[in-house]
Image 1 (cartoon, rainbow, N blue to C red):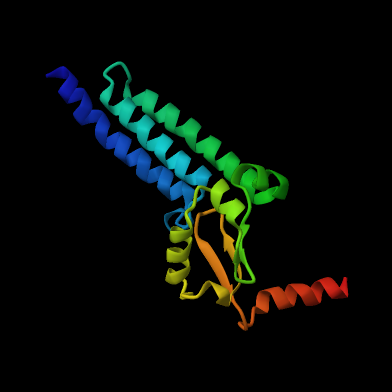
Image 2 (image 1 turned 180 degrees about the vertical axis):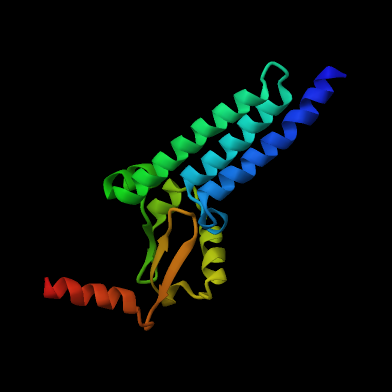
Length: 166
């Protein structure tokens, strides 16, 4: 009966720590996660579960490990937010998957993304004919961002104007 009681006492703490980590990670992670966020979420869930069900660990072990994980995540998140070089190394950067209606097949192969899956994602973005795509990016989150031919892209035009001034 003691292992069951131990589990009943530690499991709520494990769940609490998972929710606390989600709050630390921020609400952006719920809608737009990247490899670091996903890996961290899996790690926290796995460690919290293992610490909850293993009788050798006490509640204070859970507290210490979760504090350490929180600090590690916070530091990695801070580094990627404040250093472009490390952001590219840790998270990667968006890749051009379609340009002027032509699919970058090398990128599809590298990212293990089938052409059928790419076309399905483009349809979700409102593109049913790939020839209408001026440029499409495979974002670090795995989502596809699309600029159709003839659409005004105010952000890029503003950036071009700023580059001409400098």
